[in-house]
Image 1: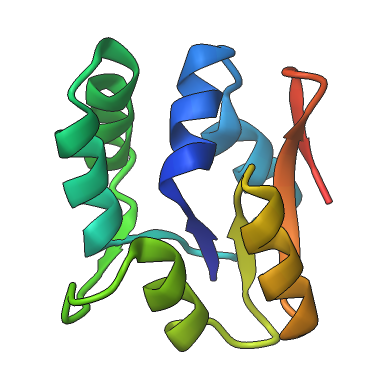
Image 2 (image 1 turned 60 degrees about the vertical axis):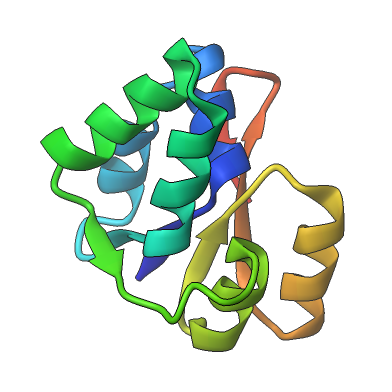
Length: 116
């Protein structure tokens, strides 16, 4: 499974990176997901990029992972992610935490494409 975080989604929209297409081309059998707290964060941001990200999640039918929502999205992702999963984020601190746990991390490089 590939889990997208809030920062990654907003940056993808802002930089007009078709992350859905790029991820699906490279990871054909992987499911794309977001945690429910990410939806809350996008709604709270409430700008055109976050609204477009919410629409992308809906239109592309990304899986919504239900959580208790009592923590920030990064901590919730860390709790549910396994070493066979991939997390997409732009957050430098969160990347370090994920790599320490042995989780692969996708990022947007050069405001243009998705890569490890």
